[in-house]
Length: 335
Image (cartoon, rainbow, N blue to C red; front, side):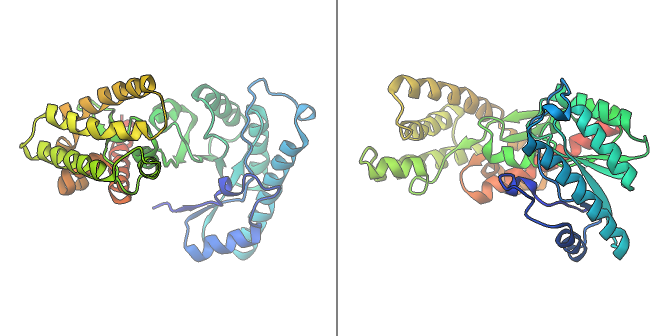
């Protein structure tokens, strides 16, 4: 199986140079036992589909482009000289589809047979299509392509014609606790994925918004703890068949109002946000998606997987999402 290592270029995006030298990177990949390793790149975020020439590009952007290529050359020489046991992957960066294609062609001429396409995270689907169209036209059909941090994981079926060998995405995991409304994935009977909002019942004495309200004297901690306890009990009661959906929705929203008031918003904004959340939570409570899922996590922890609360619950929901997405991917690729 494939175990790929890269340098986490997002961590040093503000720096003038990458945080690690190619020499350090190859040693790390070797010691960690990776099967594939990406050359140390320097992210370029903007991608202009009008394909401006290099003379119209800021010096800092060109510098990042050249650093990425220079590092790739050093990296490949080190891998070959020491005969490291992992497959080297050349990182592609660029300010436009054409510049990324040019970079890919240079990497291929260096000797790379597997390219890792960077800078895709902030790009829209149509721009990624442009990048891959130019890139594929410039390189051999036998050269493998990996999409780094492919944030449009739900759209992977649109990109199959470009001969994508692999991609990585933290999207299913991250959405479990960062997305505002699509925290829980459920496979649809006819294929695809249904998305549900998790039920937010934060810890009253740990949530920053609630703690601020307590410190300001706006909230009574005893009242918060009581409403929190009721919300948890009624949602668990719903799961056990001892409470109605109406009771669960009321208890959750009765506690949720404090989260919104803790933002310091006016009453009109609070009511507007309450309504938006209530619509999402009502759907989750009505459908009870955790009861429809047969994965080990949902069967073991039940309703706890849908409660947006502590790190353990949120991470378990993330792993559930990864499992659902992985199954969806297999179905998509086998069609």
